[in-house]
Image (cartoon, rainbow over all chains, first blue to last red; front, side, top):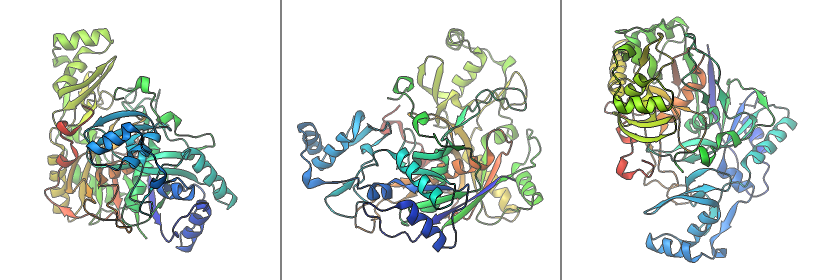
Length: 250
Length: 250
């Protein structure tokens, strides 16, 4: 019978720049009586990675461009925040009313380049997404291996999407696990090719992790246990990021 | 410590029109040693609901419109399938190359109106989405209650999305559980309003269910146990379906 379990890792101290998250998570899981095991998938909320990597911007240091200042004034926004959102993007996808949907330098399409004003822990400071989420995950995976456990790492963030209300957690970085599971070329029991060609299991795993992390409960890490995955040390988010040439909605 | 478990329900017989799915699922879960419990969330793949409700179309009966026939010829598709896809939609969102993204009569935005050629079990027959997925879920929830368990029901389907490769399972019907969890007006420990306003937990639950169901393993039902949800007998997918006036991508 296929089954899995998911639990939150509680008791992490407040994260500060330079912290070694993997070691902290490994210790906190053991402390709560759930030591990490080989085959676990550790799902880490991006905001604690941003904090550990010092991905913060002091608004007092930001000089808004005329474009940012004009648009911010029109919609009653902080022009310095708008400036950071634009700097974190390579492209504006939609700018309609007060909404700014951008493509980040990594290639993620989301509101406000993933910039987060609510979680920085200080007025006048905002958090940006980690510079290279795959690299952050790979680094954590190496530390977990040094601590004796062979785990996959997924970095999650909470994004909106077209067409549907409500946000969901999705993957923005991976290590050890391929984010896509392909059925291409396989046939169902009736001999038809599958309607489904590729499942983005990394996004489903990130969303599943949110169910135990919540957004108010300050549980920034979830562990999925019992999901079978193939080790892939070269895994990255690259195959998930649809080329804009192939995208009907950019 | 927040935690949950997810397991697949195996051993369901092949579904045929008129089948009482809730009774079959209740029996199969008990049979495999996992009887359903109060508070469980039962996630049912839409295709078995379509089969139980007889949502099939015999292609021999379909007369393609000139529009369907012309476009099908251009892209080497079966004009009768294209005709069914158009009939199942109220609007074409994108028709570029061989891709047809539509809005179904229910308001779901997806490829080919959710029409599925691979799972019908017979050549020349295709499956369409259930007519009223919320109603189907409510009916199942009532049967589960009659069998003595107070469970939520979510109907899932596998959809693609803009910007990202790989499909994920999302919710297309609910009963008993509100699909959205709202943080609107709440503040984080630093006194900021939450960056996240509403989480679509129904979609995260549907995706989590896919992780044990898979798409080849013929496990059409998953059960999530341990997730806390508030009973809401009026729940429906309506609040998830963004009004097209508010949507930047239709």
